[in-house]
Length: 124
Image 1 (cartoon, rainbow, N blue to C red):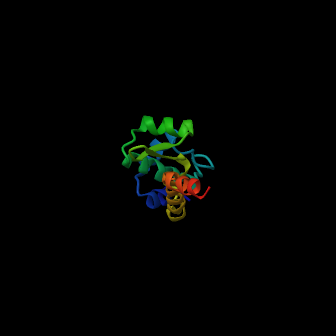
Image 2: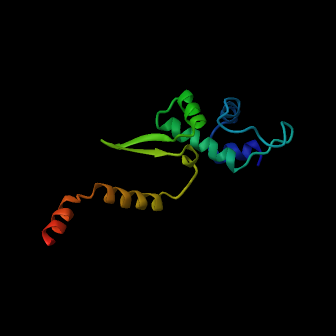
Image 3: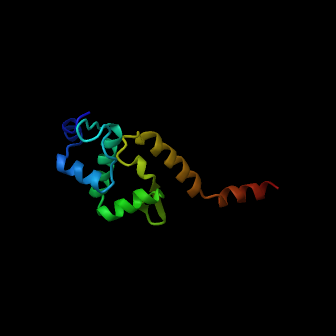
């Protein structure tokens, strides 16, 4: 796609796309300057950057986060931090199945097993 198509889909000005390329947040277009071609990877990169900015991450922190590939930490509740792979942010991945898995995991982790142990001990 051409840069105008990309900016329309992403909802950002062309100047923003050029900044993101110059700073390494998204890759340069394929095909060189005269035949610049952008793809889904560019759109996803723009959405990821925009989402992280909306969440309060400054550009320098976003750059470190993307370079480290360790994940973006989000405090969910006291004692619970969700660490998200940066490649998922702004990717359009379906959150429903992820939320269900998180619910299952938290339910299992937070389950009070003392009652289960007391019942097992009383049966002996």
